[in-house]
Image (cartoon, rainbow, N blue to C red; front, side, top):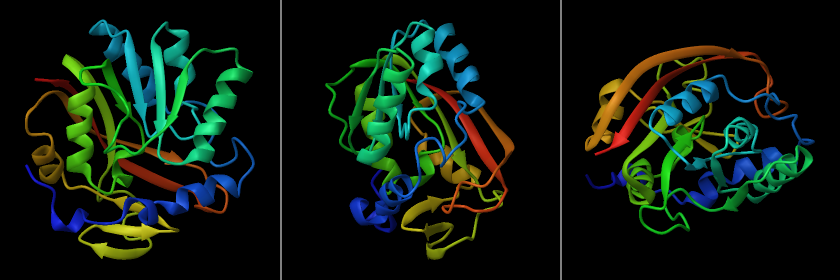
Length: 228
């Protein structure tokens, strides 16, 4: 599958808002401090397949990293913005946890081929400018049979339509990209993966500082897949 012309956006300018959003807020105030509820489910999925090494792609300020590290996995958190990566590293130090944090783009991961057993991606895939290239990179760094768990905002999300429409159901919101997927669109992207589970999941979120200053309801597709 080749990248759509619609994804030919400049990644740096498309997501410059994330750096601004983190830099404008004190640590831990942008999101709630606890891991996303899906983290516990992801940990169980990885344990079932005997994962030892993992990348959390789009790790933000690292709030989802501790449960995986405490479970004994060797964890690397990756995010494209330097401020959240610095905060993720500080979070691990403050909690006495050993992990790696790296600033890198999802389409150019600084890891060799077949480097890790698993990749998680929480609340981040919908912000990727080129999802096709990102999935290709995830495939590249995963070992054969490696696990991938991701949640992806869908068009039933309460925030779908917020911001400047770029194309289809993709919007620029406060300097960031939000793409809201239809099921058939996401399934097509995942062609070539062995899908273990594909379902819809919703939850209510509190305000996120100035970035999203109102309560909202996220509707997601949750996917567990294995590298074929």
